[in-house]
Amino acid sequence: MACFSFSHNILSKGINYKHIASAQEVKSAEGMPQALKEPVRSPDLEDWFEQEAKKRLATLPQDCSGKQRQDFLEKPNRYADGSMSPISLDELLQMDRLCASADDILDRAQQGVELLSSNDCYPEYGTAARGIPGGGASSRAAKWTRLHPELAKQFGLTETLPRPLFRVGGKTLLQHTLDMSQCIARNMGKVFPNVIMTNSENVSLFLDVIRQEWGNYTPSELDATVLFNQIVLPRMWVADETLIQNKLYPAGHGDYPYLFGKYHMAKALQECGIQYLVFSNADEWLWQADPVMVSIARELFDQGHHMVIIGTKNTNNQFGGGFVRQKDGTQSLVETPRLPWEIVEKGNAPVALNTTFYMIDVDYLAAHERALIDVEKSLVVKEVPGRKEGTVEQILGVDSWAGDVFAACLNPAFIEWPRLNFLGIKDGGFISGQEPKEELGGRTYLHYVNETVNTYPIIMKRLIEGDKEMASFLAETGYSYF
Image (cartoon, rainbow, N blue to C red; front, side):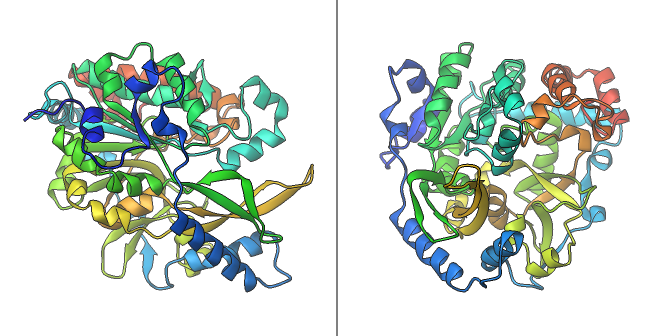
């Protein structure tokens, strides 16, 4: 039996959805919809945070400072030594093995189009939905903005601007990400629902973008798009254990799967015939419902995996979220602040880095929503402008990571993707940089980003149409879009 639309489905269940609104409601409202106005608070989480932060600070060695202090305070987050080991590159599935020829790519593209188009429950929709965590301004982006005030001003960047709202070529990263998803859907005559996480501290900026940039959305596309607010809470100055009371901070991307489960969004998507949740940060916009990737995901889901995670080679031994195998043999993803200390202490960074590109089995997720709610939070240390002008101080806050939470219950499979297909835009240098970069094939960051915007929709359109020349190009480049 067909549902009305994703937003109607999720908002009509009678459960407390006071923090969720549809894009259609946003477009038609005079001001901010009441559903997104109030902060989402968690008294239990705030009590835990204050007690845990003070407990860790009470045992902090007096001569500890800077990075040492951060390591000490974050150490209780970590899994036990010996509980897991990094997965080698040889253990990863590779795109050039999965798609060894142009014919392989064409076959997978055709199968992916069929999978994406076959929605027996609600034929207007495809079978993929797009998930995006809005989040807050990242500490790396804020630091870059402080160090490059003139460039920041030129590109409209501020310390508190959420990264999805960085602008490239006149549009925000959020808009580019949704445009690329919409392009694939429209080429198949379908609508893909969107599920966007914001928070009360930045939602007004998101709503401004929706009203300014979503003029080409149809009523069905607006009705299929929902925004929901995540949890916000205070943070604490490390130096004197004082709570920051005049500002609230988001509790990390792990709120996405947590609230996704709590609000039964997976079941609402399932009832609308959605089978694939495509999830990434808005600055990682090349992760979409590429029909080739959907075909691969379906194969892996049928083998017992319920999540595909894209990774790239860790070419400079940087610490980031990594792929691990636990003692019981299961695979998982663990972000840096939770990796066992023995891995961090020895400097053995994972050989493949998580890129926050996930494709998730909605049917399995709908049956295991409870596992998303039973999630551990962590405490992290960040550097921010201090209370005295010109100073920098450390603060303690609650954080969690969507990849960890999803991977813990979905038995993920890992795929190594070409490095050029991934450019996470982490600060203003990625949208203003005009120096040629070897890792970008001699392109500047600015050139790379703009080439992405212009070429990706063409590649997807031609793949969907079964274009042999495009398939040959992708085969020759190891499935690089460039």
